[in-house]
Length: 231
Image 1 (spheres, helix red, strand yellow):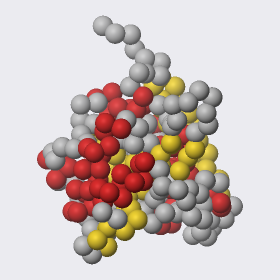
Image 2 (tube, helix red, strand yellow):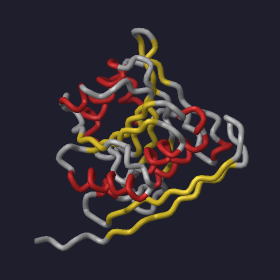
Image 3 (spheres, one colour):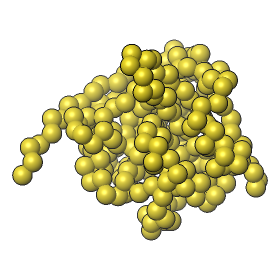
Image 4 (cartoon, one colour):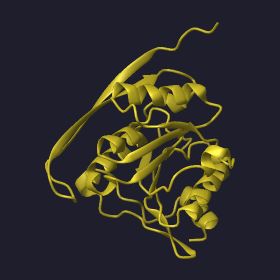
């Protein structure tokens, strides 16, 4: 029997004196984190960026049906649920530890009514087909392993074809395999479908949230998304 991995919980407090939606408020959540080689259960910086975005646009997400893919620790989805969204958390159907961690996140934050389902990228499973109408798809740092990119985009493309008005909000980190090099956080947001064509909206005015603007130069990931979505 393998040794149980260390479990800890991180506390996040979101405070906003003013937002694009108006109003002030404070939200505190606790997220369990497992120090495990399955890195999907670690709270990566991209999750914090996307969670902050959820909080900043909390009035926008309220009442929306939101699916988080590759949820792992589930910070963005938990924040969205606390802001009044109807959230569904998902991770790979074969990743039972990650799914259990999603359930722990819900329990710690008193969100017992948030469903957790297994969705394997690239597979059209019954759970994927039977999803309700989705308004927003969240993906925090899901573009991590290049060999997974095609499967991820296949799943997102299926969801957006089924939900023509859905938005795909994602954060990712551009990682350079260079010693002592810096990493940049970009926020390519609001991939959406309009009619029969795909349109991408790059968020440019994020200074109020403390997030980094999307770069003018296209990254390899952006080019891949543009090609596959025919933007």
